[in-house]
Image (cartoon, rainbow, N blue to C red; front, side, top):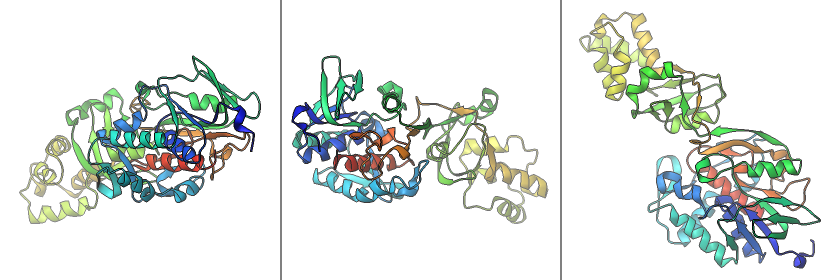
Length: 396
């Protein structure tokens, strides 16, 4: 190890989000002199707004299968060494009340700021120096260590950790800073795109659906690669809700996917049975028994049949396909301004899966969202932030 006595700090971490805070805590506990810098006036801004202000801080069943990466094995190491139960233990030690929602998603019972306050308190206990409202103008490597320049000074360090996330939610100050640092040191970057983001239609395609804005329905959304069974939400510009946010991470421009508005139901078979059992029932009434009223009205608006008894098999098939195999081809997405995360980032080929250190630049680390590891909705991205932060903090 280098003689660190000549450095201002042992470790400088740029980015006081989930990953940066966790790395600072773990490194500080090792008696490393840690400086944590962020341009924002408050730490953990994405933590604060997450989960509707209640922070979906992890997922009990988070595993490597809940992540997208060019290397599907890279994140296994960090995730296996720092689990959701490890973070839950920290939450409980701080007396933060929590609750489990659908499918293992853990939320604060109170405000998400409790998680931020917990992490800041842990930083202080570990002796971390936190500088907020401080821009980083640039970084360099003048020798074995690194130099980090702010508007007021340049500080030196042995290890430099980049935890600045991606460009999603730019109104919070998100930027491509981490990618610029990677490019500066010659590292490869996997193309970045908005992920966990609402999808949009063309104006022409969206016009007939605007009357459905605000309607939510349990659905299954499927493409050639994956399926998600979660609620779907109609918006004035297209589709959102958990099912669509999930599939957006696997969607490429120009692709279509299938929406099943009545998952678990054989719609055609049920229609045929009810045509025999309840012949006088109208198609709109049949739809209203299974779907929200406005959606049922929309689907039945073009039908010229008053009763199920009047509908031939071809008409039943067409209606069934509208319900269970609606083919959706989005025109685009709401972009980074509405994206919860960024897919892509620093290539995992450049990093050690055990430490998050770059292979070609000793002492330089990348953690969290800035790396090409993107989680599903439901607390998985936070779990990656905690796990990658710990992996880095244990060695940086």
